[in-house]
Length: 404
Image 1: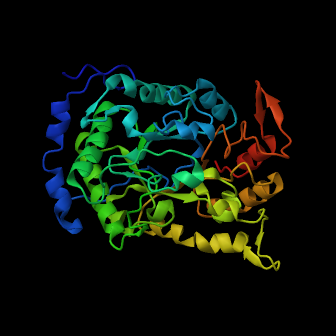
Image 2: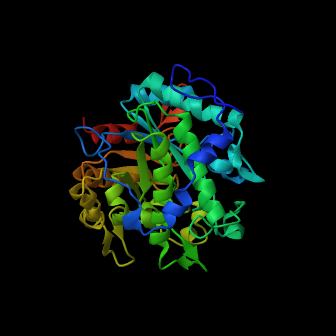
Image 3: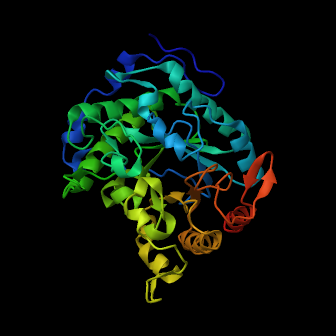
């Protein structure tokens, strides 16, 4: 089906499958070349500032096609991103949302190269809402063809069914081709929309696992896949701002991508026994941890983690700036089972660390257990807000840490 004219937002309607496939010609061969021969040149992605001042939240309306997650996160699994979320964020001074999404919502289960245009329209709508309220929208594949960080979880312990990928983004050509196809499709669909309004986050928390352990060459394999997607995107939209999560579940920088100039983003959930205490998807381990304190103490009262240790741990995230590479903290937060005073103390120190790196930040939720609205955290002094419960104390902490 031939491509329709763009609307006033620069969005396209039907996109020819043939056109996308043609634009991918040669990408697999290019990805197979040594990294130094990939032909990617260093690019400046952000004018006048190496790190954007982006502050906000993740919105989960397209998070997972596996409905068990709806027991733990307040979304309806229908892609209907809520306008009030964008409005309230804007009113409180936030300017960024990430949409961590499952590609299977809009992709034919039997043909990864076939996309249902109708099911992509909720993403179009979210971008328009971002434009309306001055909120940057980061389009992200939380589940990509051949990889999702959720795969391999302990379904029996967690009580969460996960339909896993059948092949590997890191090892299988078919998965790599489908991954690139997704991003070439989005690059064509949103070409013409400024990178000040929309960016692409390649895949959530990359890490290759083999037999339950990190693969020795996993980072190299991810770099290869990321480069193929970057080339595909830039073949359609050379100016699109592209983001990669750090390797090892979004925790370490990826020097192998510095020359591409794409932004790198860190996820801060450290230390896990503080941020993920009793989290259902971290069971059974999360049920054995003691009630969190901050600073984190062992049974003898010795400090395990505090502000200085946090600063030291994340110091390597200052390195990308030396290479002209911007950073952002695209996920962070504490789950609802952590006592409020611990949450507030942890956020104060974590946000100071992030501010010291001149980076923006985003919480995993807006509404829900890691957010500021309807967190259901016992002991919280909530403020009634349009029929919702607002953690106004945490909101004020976040606002106090945002730099202009």
